[in-house]
Amino acid sequence: MIIHDTFADLLLFVYVHMSESDHNYDPSEMTVIKEKMKKLFPAGTDLERKLYHTIREYNSFDKSKLHTLLADSFEHFDKNGSSLKNDMIKDIKEIFTADGSINPDEAEALETLKEIIDHHTT
Image (cartoon, one colour):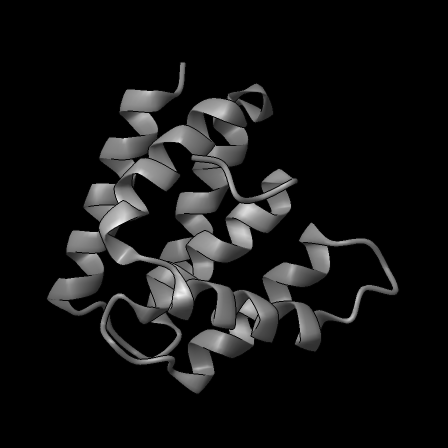
């Protein structure tokens, strides 16, 4: 299942998912995501609109299909290379710590994501 046209759109979806993994969209985490978006999307992109569209997309997504979506998407976008995926993990850790800590739900979500990435990329 692939729902994103670009790897950048997938990354933003993952960032939103990881931010919400503790069942809270923390404002400090959203600030970090917005900073990351400046590097992901071309100048002139309405970042606020894109972020809130992605949050709505994530909120309406059937979470029982999340593992399949992430596995298929990382396999599909594997051409982006492992260094980009390593950067994504580093970015997620930065998003998590924006509110001062990483809670157990966030740590578990990160481990699950790492397993999916490792299993579905070369």
